[in-house]
Amino acid sequence: MKGIDTNILVRFLIGDDKVQAEIVYKIFKKAESLKDELFVPLLVILELIWVLESVYEISRKEILDSIYDLLLMPILQFEHQSILQQFIQDAKVNSCDLSDLLIAHSAENKGCCSVLTFDKKASKHTLFELAK
Picture 1 (cartoon, rainbow, N blue to C red):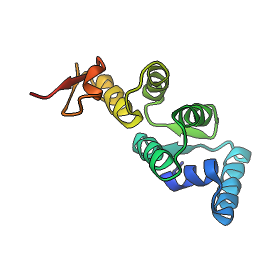
Picture 2: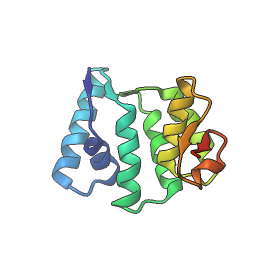
Picture 3: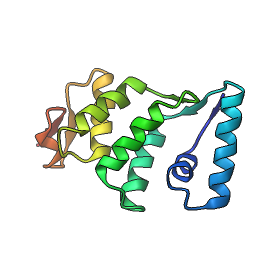
């Protein structure tokens, strides 16, 4: 199994660099034909969110839909897939920053009762606690 970096998913989703997007398409097709999987670290998803929001100005809904669609791809094996599924469901019903939510769900999965933060907006979510 091989892991993939954020830029692979960006090229797949955005296709802004045609040459690289074609390479990604071939990599995915080869994995599919070999019934192989590509590993997607949780940090790649965190970075993907940041890139899609800040560089490409993709809407929150489109980002969540894209991550959901990626989760359905049999060639992609995600680190902590259940965290990503919980994150997507939570993100649909509140306005917390996506990156913050993913961090909180990751911490909750490891048994944390909350995530300490100075972010007042994030601290309104039950998974966060304002640091005092």
